[in-house]
Amino acid sequence: MKSTKTGANSNFILIGGLFAVISMIVGIIGVLGAVVTYTGFPFRALPVRWLPYPIPVINTGFSMWYQFVSELGIGPSAFLFNVGLILAGILALPVFPGILGLFRGSIIAKIGVVLGLTASLALVGVGLAPMVMSQLHGTFAMIFFISVGIAIILLSFEMYRGEFFSKAIAIYGVIFVIVDLAFLIQKGALLEWGVFFIIVTWILAVGIQVILKRKEM
Image 1: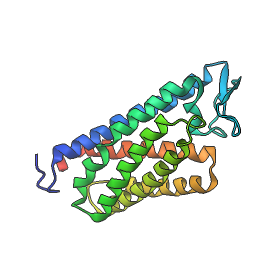
Image 2: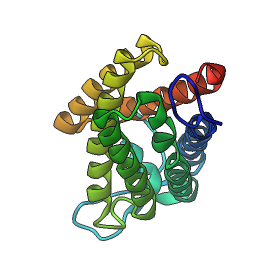
Image 3: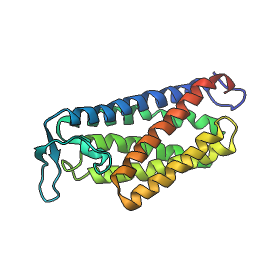
Image 4: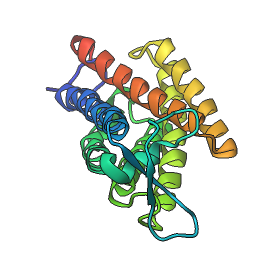
């Protein structure tokens, strides 16, 4: 169905919103479920830089203060975490092209969409190439963090200029970029978790707003 307000296919936009919610729910279940799984085992995998594989040590529980998100990709939590990222990345692919119609063909938004697609594919790569187990992990992770950061700042800029999305979501996107940049500079585990939670909640907010305001498209 063609929207008279945006000139875009409202059904396609709605699909993007639905997949935004679905993909993030899958991502949350995969990551937080992996935290629970990780904590429930007596041993955990300890990555050592000079060894090709992690070594088992006594599990004292998972701590977001000093353990990176990707550490869930090895050991007993590996399957849930890695599969969760792969599925979330695949399910996120329709999200960015889906909401493009809300930006009236903006070049800035188009660049943001391309980078959003790149980030989704990189997330799949992170799941397929766990840390320590694959040398490609760092490459995929870096592509993801850089691509998603630029994508969100560009789309947030267009959201702020437009009328469909709330200004709060646009401002929240700017906050994400600050946290993402701080993580890329400092490489802290807690900052990485901050990046994860803000990405998830930002995309969820975008998807929910698209669904709730579907009649205004």
